[in-house]
Image 1 (cartoon, rainbow, N blue to C red):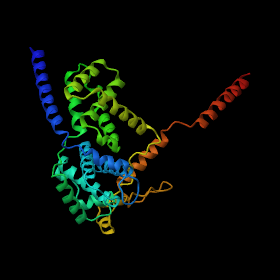
Image 2: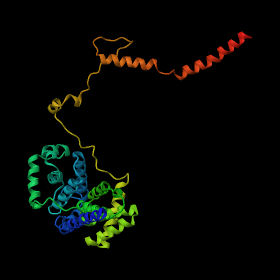
Image 3: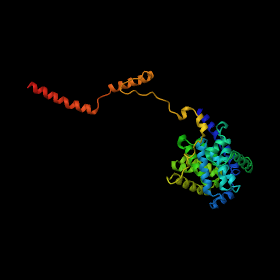
Length: 347
């Protein structure tokens, strides 16, 4: 009876997951950046008036660093990249404005995903990101982005499908739940987001590529068959899956190599004024004074009893310690000599 109830519960969960999957499959086209706009960025030459792929990728890596610095969720980063790419695919942006746009997209994504109490102020984000803009600049840019994207920030992304596909696989597999590491898959998705080319892929296809590559590594026939059914349900063609899977595989291989430049998380530092530093608690910048250890066995009566106890315990440890190796060797050499003298006297 319990097995039947467990099976019924599992089927209900799977039914709900497929219902959510169908909903997001219908919506993913609405939140995908314009392919024509992305192609213009891909073909752009690098100069002070044109946004090129390298500058876009560097800005996305900065968003990754900001996400890690503030301890935000992967969803915040992926959503910030989605908002950024959708805006860049609509507008002709100069490189000098990219920093302000990136910070603004990060703030918009954080408002959607994170708890309000955990979201830093615009002033703090500007200081930490070292963005050369003011709070008023950020507000004006937020107004422009919001109007161009029609205030649609809760987007369907590749992370949405990655979570759904992962949950569907776990519902139907008999293998251990830990076999598919979701954190690893999310990290791989973030690496792909740092390449402009993957913004042209359908989010559902990109997510399925990551899962199929991981299952291929695990060499699990059962998981592979489940993903085949998911692919069929999502109406993803074999040609699309193979094309993007090759690009994803190459991206992950390049990103794993030591020659690849990873996002620099160390360059993000807190910058405080002298007045702020003076108001910090003492424990942040001072070392508590410790009692002076008396020399030559002398004890200062002005010191605390704890210091006296520490010194006495130290003396006990010294007196009870075993003799050194040199002392052991000396006494070992001395004893045979004494024994020989005793025998000689007896004779």
